[in-house]
Length: 260
Image (cartoon, rainbow, N blue to C red; front, side, top):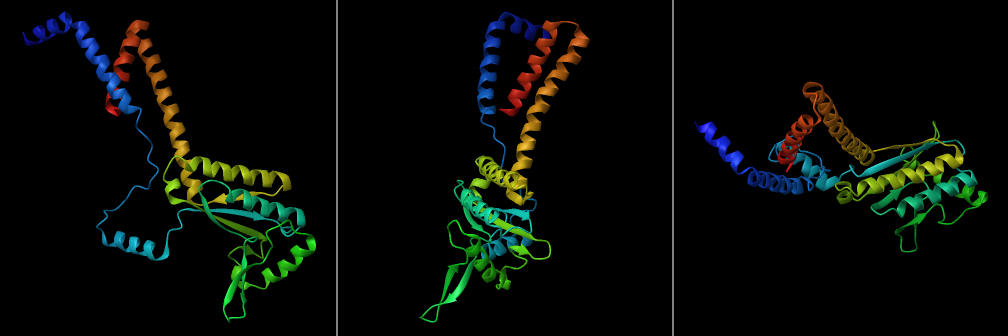
């Protein structure tokens, strides 16, 4: 009796219930459109855990390297005039990318020089201009005489050279990081193509951005694929386009409501 009464109410006020259903679906759909992918690390342990507190104290004292993107090249002709000057131009181009804070590399390396007041001044080893081969060779000798940079910015055994790019942490935790990383990759690819030198990129900014973008694309294709597969299965069962469309509508409305 109860179900018969409920069925009569639904059938009698069908248009009213349909309007309510469409209105609720539109409301939840609007909220579902506001859903965004999280770009922050999820905490694996509670914030009051002693180990987590030790980690936070360490970060406050020594900083965080999670915003460093490493760019490596390997060539024995690094100090050749055309390659080195283009490497300097690459560094300048990366500095102009919105979100890049600091860069450490061979062209921006400094030497500590004692001044008249018995203090030390940080002086660039390589001048910030287009250099001749003679100027590069002269500055190169000064650079090689500073053991601090050995195995930090270059490896003399493998002829590998490193550039470290620090990116703003707030941008790394936002969708804007995709453009920052993409711009850097585009600049390095142009340098690589011009001199036929393999450029290797690594670091959390690159890995996090590529993985997040890949997950986002896969989620989109998974959603489209699941809808198409469901439609094919329902069509095989019902052999009716109207019944298939109605069943899919129920599923889609349920997904919209859940996401909203």
